Length: 265
Length: 242
Image (cartoon, rainbow over all chains, first blue to last red; front, side, top):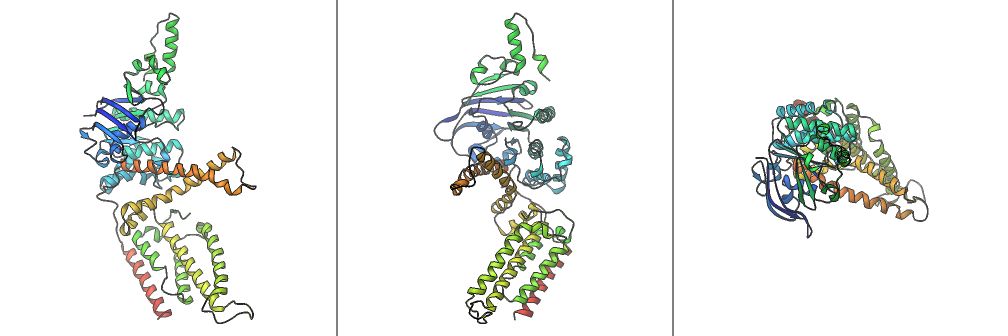
């Protein structure tokens, strides 16, 4: 199962955004996607849950299969049970007045029983340790809390795969750490996690696999320790994690060290 | 704004459809008879206060309404076409005109209080569910969501004004009229962007295919209020109009 992508091409108008992408993601993987601005990361995420080609029109070709469902033949609503997508800006996702209503929205759309909805809302609030926010008004929350509410509202629907588009872009160190702790927890429980992220240090720490997207194609694909040591990275425009830069520097001076254990969780 | 206010009053517990019924029946569109309008106004005011709502909650609106009403009374006094009784010799102010302006103002205030009762005691999602009875679901959803974004837009407008002013934009002076262009353009761009994102986010969470949404239930209290409102409305109509 997982995700299977074959010959995916997409363009909003003339300029191709995604070029001939082939990719497999297995169940239970923790995948990090990095890439410079404008490389097509967000567009790629939208292809995964069927928003492209159903809502956003453009030149789309190829096949994307999520948990055995081809996104061309299943609607976004049907795919939502298998794959959850959390967007970058929490302010443009939250629309309910209370946190509880916001989380219940997806569950109500699924047509669940009232008691089941209550149970799931409480469950997800507990899992993210934000039980105290349940009755709060959404516009009074901090950015970090809003981000967690967004995550909760998607997690409550219990999808097998979770895609996050720069979930920590508005968070400080503590907030980022918290988000990654939650993601790791979910990952341990068997969820597939795909994170689009600029903060490479965090991916190095948590991800099982790193994909580097450059001009619409995955140019590097492998273990964090391999990808982040690749000298191509800086040419593409991605920061090499500090540990590996020091390692490289020491190697040049004739000292052989392996920092991988130092940075991995 | 008329935003939901938490509480435990009778109206807080009512079915939202009952409150809509109450709202529509106090619109008092049948007549401009002052006695008729006054009794409905007093009735609405009574319900407003009985549900422990305070004038503080509608402060922003009432200011506008009061100014508007005063203007209305003055204008009607001068220009009411059916006025016969001149109050001051030489001036075209008529008693009928003032009475008419007063009646319209009463109606406006009745609507204000009635709307306040509906909005302040009903949660957004309950408004949505009963709006869904009258309107297509998508439209009802858009309407209720719009309310949630008002505070965000207020916040954003402030930020944009500050950032434009720090780039030297002047609020005073001869170019005052052009002040709002550099504010409105980014605000709109952002709003469109946000609308797009919201649509995608809502779709991601399965909007549009709902099978069972919310459970509506009319309880005894609801029927009592519906019946009470109905009896009162008919009584007023019978007493003052027929």
